[in-house]
Length: 230
Length: 162
Image (cartoon, rainbow over all chains, first blue to last red; front, side, top):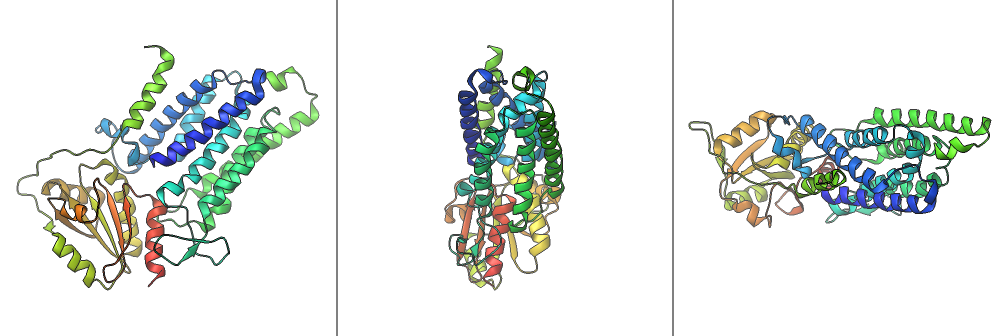
């Protein structure tokens, strides 16, 4: 858990740094490092609280447990918490900020899924495909499903980076990708409790709507100062 | 302290979070789990004709609380094909029973007051989950909290071989 979070944080931070360098004077995110750390801290707190309550632990009666990150973090609620911080701190420049951080968020997701290598949980359902991998001590070959997701997200990062100057497009496509990749890899996953599949579907729908809105807006309006500076 | 330093301090505090133990006293007169020694344990896994999932836990171990519902769910789904065994490690009897009641664990649980089985398995902290083939051969040992994907993979590996 800790190393997976670390991998996600490192890839996300590297992407924020790269975005900051590439966009230089056009950056709409004020003090991106502070924003990243603040959003990550609040996201972790929200995700940890959600995981505690999901496990039947009352945070009010066991406040010390909140610090035990390895006890579990709900990634969905952590993401919502982090985005809420971003939305609040950049409420006047929200579309531009979201677009510019979308590649970093997707890079962070790639790191999260790639972090399976540290916890030995990359593999899914069995298959005979040539790139299948067997877990240690067994001869059962399986889909490296978490690596599928990591590679898909990594490939998407430069695509999103090329869209950051078009309001709502990068954030919309990023959100749709985040849900779409999870939906596409879901059949290859092993799970005891199942996943929040409808959340992924909702992310695809909302992301596609945002992307369509951004695309139609930039197509019908000539580029002006507000399209970049927000 | 400057305001912009606060997120960094918060992150450092969160990163420093780790599991710890307390010497909780057992409730007097409470029912106790049957004890298990290393000799009992090795004899039991060698005699098992079903694969086994063995989880070492303690009521004072915070990460153990997060995986207890997952283990209950895994047992409900696979309990007819896999023998689930929980071992309360270095825990007070009353607290162990309260933990089992709190999470509604219905699989077999025993008590290792000295933590000898954990040492025999090469573990230091808790929790610890072991996937064992029929006959006692250890397929995999998972140190630390186990998540949904890792538990499902271990169970599927055991079932795929049988």
